[in-house]
Length: 173
Image: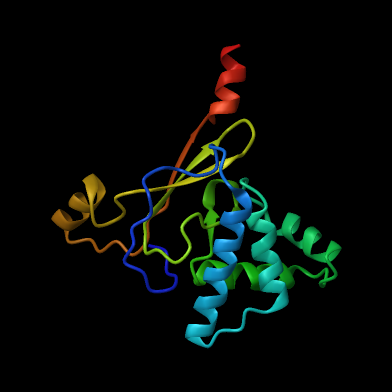
C-alpha cells in the first residue's frame, strides 16, 4: 500500500497515463501534496528530491535511476548514483513514486496522498505505464488464499504487461 499524507479518499479506478488529461494540474497537485506531507511530518523536501519528483511527473513512462541521474545532472545536481538513489528512496518511502519491478524503474504516483494498493499497466511496446487501483493484499483471491493459509502479506506488486491504446491501434492498422 502506498503511504502518503493522511487521506481517506480512495483513488479513482480509472488508470491515468493512457488518457489525455491536464498534465500541468497533475504535476502541480503532486508537488503540493509532497510539500504538505513533508511539512506535516518534519521531512526535508530538498531541491534534489523536488527535482527528481518533477522529472518523474513529467513522464508517463517509468524511468531508470541512471536516466533520472542524467536529468538531475543536467539540472545542476551531482552526477554520482547515490544522488538519484537517495532521492528515489525518499520518494518511494513517502508514497510519491513507485518502483516498477519488471522494468527496474520508477514512476511518479498517480494518486499522491491517497492510501491505495496500486496496480500497473505496462505497455510492452513503448514502456508507457498507467497506474490504477487494485484490491491489494486484503481483497481478492490472493488475499483470501493468504488468509486461508495463515500467510501475512506485507507487500504486493501487481504489474500487467500488454499494449497501451496507442500501440494497440498501430498494431491493428
